[in-house]
Length: 419
Ligand code: GLU
Image (cartoon, rainbow, N blue to C red):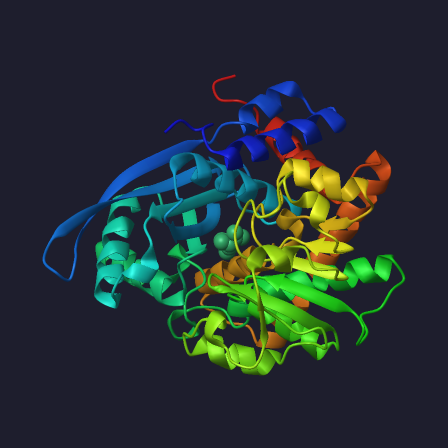
């Protein structure tokens, strides 16, 4: 598959071009940023529980290492491809630069449905994938983390495999690890927490407050959506709808979030939750709510359904949930979009804290983590808000512009090799 083949890559590419044009970016720098620095494709043979061997397609793409080691998650999903991984790596470059981290952008993944696999199969697949990409990862080179379909356990296997290859424990090779092996307090809920910080910052700018009549719909009640639901619920907002792969549940008076959490944590599907109204994921996206948080996967709001999305504010918890066209349609009708590279940056910010703590072997308390997360996100939010006013553009473009100006500055200082 070619780099440019997936709609997601084309979309990221067109956002880059349009922001580059608005800020009058140096065309030579823009040209460089369209391509990843390197992309590794690997084959991952796994002996399944029935004794047969199946080979999965895996990738690790480093888009840019200008500002520091590559950073970005590893995704286990049937849609993973070289092109999608390259697009996600590009977004990680922009995300890390936007929030001022000394890190580049990378992403990895395996084309697989992990929900079909046993623990032993998942472990074998993760260990072999790690071995195959070991030559390009490492605390100074590229530091993976969880993404869709992977979690703290996956990262623990990755850390162990890399450490076995080296002969000593290397916690800094990966973030999103369990706390017991060098993970950071607060990492698990950091992405959702950051989403809610951004919503709060946006409400402050609009001179509004979250009250018990503020309605929220959350697409994807997982690693991002669940902690976001909790924080908004504890601020008094009414979470009227949440969803998972099986469908959505709705209650105009507000859902019982602690009960839904308990249900999902017990590995049960929302479809089977009794005593509530069931709607589809598509209906959830079109609810008339104050805040919509698409926190599941990319491309859920496109030019085909953007006209039906009524939410006043959309906080992009996932990477790329709105296509470029959908962003334009929604901002043209006055909707405020908090863009992914800002809105979901809480995860990689606390990943950065985890990496720093791991390198120093000195660990912080939860308040320190959350306070530093808040302050970094506040600074980034203010920068983007200001760029929106300066360039008279939407928040998505403003986030790209703010990030690109940082990368452009750094690339020009480092220069091109060979000149
Ligand atoms: N996968 C997450 C993201 O897309 C986290 C990446 C990281 O922590 O390195 O931002």
